[in-house]
Length: 469
Image (tube, rainbow, N blue to C red; front, top):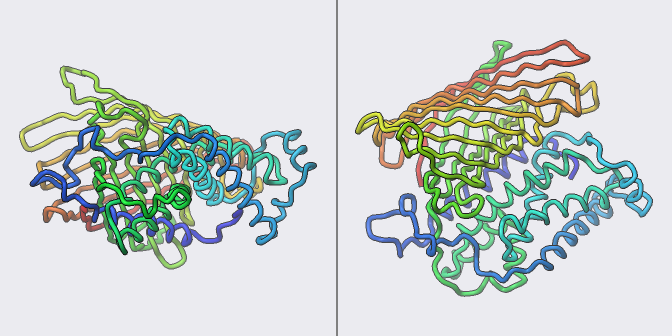
């Protein structure tokens, strides 16, 4: 579990976790919805929503499952993979406590993806046993601490603790809610089997608990999911590198918006609203992988300039980008102000401003290898500003710029600054089909204590077709 040799593996995972499940979600039983309304625009009353399936709270079983998960993975690493780091003893455990936390040297994808995936399973061991969001959080932290101190002969890692627990909680809650969109206990036969299997792929711990409790084959009522929307898109992604080389990628993207960002009165618990964007861009010898997740923790409407269409909120966010040229990741707590203004009867403008504290961030650097790493990492901050014009039901024009600052604590000491600009237009050619054109600019600048400062920029243009499910 310590190495991933190609981003293709991650790309396959993202494609399987988005495209297959989202198509199954779209086939949910909406026969009970009021006439003329679809799942995408029908907002269910709070008592109708399936947020968490009926289950008595069990605080002990998830603790046993977290310990069992660590012991199972540890045994695999020891006896099957024969990994050196898994050869533990009471001596190594004592040394870990004596040494304390350090920064580890694992590769980018291991630290920034596999560790959060592991943490999501810790979290969902509790979530799928009836515990609420905040009640499940200690299980992710406790599972990570157990692994760091007891399951490796290497000292515990600062970045692993943050990525496994904090990032893992974000992915855990999203996967918990997505898996519940898929499950429908009123179905039978092949459809029921496919739903249960797909849900288990998305959320293994919930699948495990449904199996041992017999819920996988229990007959129940129809699923009434919360309001959500799904958009799948594909097209061409052309990147212009600063060495005058361009490369064209086949682009596949999926967007899931769960809940309504403006429906703050129903945001009674974390992640009642969240957005999840995943993309895989494939070219010979290189792939671009992107994951952007944002979920509300708490929010409220505020009056500004006699306009009540304003929201101020606190969000939990994860940004992840990876290819051969640039890498960027940030786990953040974000404050956001959202403003919506009707310019005319046909034109609406949406504005948003964010300020984030980056708990753990990382980006690649040509100097990181000199320090024994393949990227620099540390805490930092970010901010963004965006505007979108919506022209009735036929077009959207938007622009968003986000700037990251990462203070390197492991790698080449210094400061990393990364900027992402996205500007584009969407034109709706049919009710569910949209053509889009987007310009992207990725820029970075590094100030280093022991090395020359460095700057670079890459631009991209992408054309795509989007389909709303």
